[in-house]
Every structure is written in structure tokens, then in C-alpha cells.
Length: 392
Image (cartoon, rainbow, N blue to C red; front, top):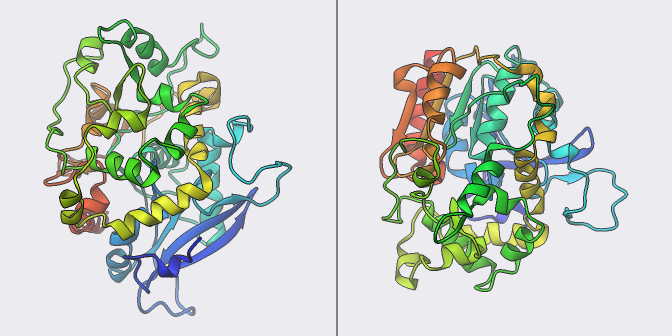
């Protein structure tokens, strides 16, 4: 594995180091203001949380501008990802395996990882926790559970809908929403399946790491079809959560029943000339993801989906049922990102029910960006983040 200092697009101003936190050796990328002497209070802290299948590296384009604006910016490889590893283990294998204990990957423990990281960095409060994709849910829960520590929150690309509802007559509910939806999708003609349920299967990791087209080609296609470069991404609010509405989503969300994710995205892979034109994820930058996932596999990240689709792993969050985010909140996504609307009503619930302090101007859809908004349009993301932070 190459050293982060050699990764393309990673500024020399971004440092790589690891911290021992609980049961983890957490790898972080870190950028500081140019002038931050040790004899003055430290600069305000920003925590940036990646999603799937990404890494701390996904924030490379926004970290230095945020640091130049006066912030201490930290992006960790989250549990199960990249160079963050278990510090002690009785496992007989180096990679995360499907058979491993899922308890460490449940949401409440992911939040605990972040609280421990903040303290390990020497801070007692965070100016803002920013989460993209699955990291959005972690950031949302951080702000919900510890508003004393996380003073504001930015959710990106995936609307946050709060803690699970407490149903006294079901302990826990028998099925998750994704599981129930998946059963109905299988009845469509042609039959379909929900991607989160597929990601929860024992085959998903091998399907992707050993994709027929190769790992590099698979990741190139996957990042492409969820970006603004794929012209089919013209999202809009779906009318309801019924199956006929969900069937309108692209194959990377509502998959053909008998296809793997590698097969589902292969038909829309880029041509060689299209790859050459891509300036937001060059071949050398893509190679960083390929190298890291070739080493670790995807199972660590897939375990997050397994916890999300099995209600037993979210039962401890029900103590926060009905609680709202009290700190200032913002949502940022690409305008060509179906993630905003993949769950009908989720964005509106976030804006009107879950977040007490999300202003109208702080629900932002960035032109010319899809799901990977901080990589596709980093300048716009920095602009919106700094505006939001300035207004706090």
C-alpha cells in the first residue's frame, strides 16, 4: 500500500496519522490553519465523515480551503474502512469478515467512536460535524445525542430522519422498512430488490471485490452512475413509498433481482474517451480507492448496512425516539443526486420534523453535482459550509 503522502490530489498541507481510540487504531487526514501556535486556544474543530464506498480521502478537495478559513479539519477513515483497524483482535484474518460480530458496527457505537475521537484530539466541542452518504446518518445521530459536544451539523446527500420510532407493542419491530420494501419489490415484473438488502448479503463483498470487469472498472462505473456525469440522473420527489414509485429509481438503488451491483452498473460504464474527460476523479485518484479496497475489501462498510437492515442493531437508539436535533443544521447535496429522494418524504421530514434549526437557505442542492458532491463541486461545498459556519 502506498503512503498517503503520495496520493494524488492530496495537498502537502494535509497530514496523515493514527490515534488509538477504544478498540481502534483510527487513521485520520488532518489540515490545520497556517498559523495556530500552541500557546493560544486551538482553532475550532470540523469533523468530516465519509460514506460508502469512500474514505477520508474523499474530503481531499475541501480540507485545505476549510483550514485556510481558520478551522482544524479532521477526516477519519471510519470503523471498517481504509487504514482504521482493530488495535487488538483475536481474529485469525486481517480483513473484516461476514462472520465477525456486528455489534461494533451499530449506529450508537459509531457515534461513540466519534465522541472518543474528539476527546483524543484534545477538544471538548466540535464547531460542526459534517457527514456524507452513510456518514450523514452518523453526523445526524452525533448532533441528536450529544448537542453539548457537536455544536452544529451538516448532512450531505442522504437526508437524516432521526432515531427509530419507539413502538411499545414490538420489541424490536419485526422488519426494517428496507426488508419490507424488498419483499414487495420481488413481486414486480421484472422483479427487483433494494440495494441495502443486497449489501446485507454474504455474497456482496465478493461480488464487488472480485467483480467480473475487475475492481477498477467496477468502481469507475459505480462512481460514474451516481454522479452528474450520468445523464440519466434527473431526480425528483417521488409521490409515495409505494412500490410503483420506488421502481422508478435507478438500478443502483432498486436493482434487478438476479444481478450483483457490479452487473447492475456495468451497462452504463464509461468509454475510454469519457474516462479521459473526467476531471473530478482522475484515474490516479481512482487508483487510491482501488488499492485501499483491494487490501481491505468492502465488508467493513457493508456491516453498516447489515445493522441498518436488521432492527435488532438499532434498538438501543429507541431511547432517543421523538428527540429532535436542537443545534443549527444544514443539508447539502448535488442537484443530480437521487439520494435526496430515494426515500419519499425523508427530506421533508428532516427539514420540518427532525431539525429544529434548519433554515430554508440551508437546504442546498448544488448545480452540476451528483452524489459525490464534495468531489464533483468542492468549491461550491466549501462556499456553503463557510457561509453556514459564519452565521452560527
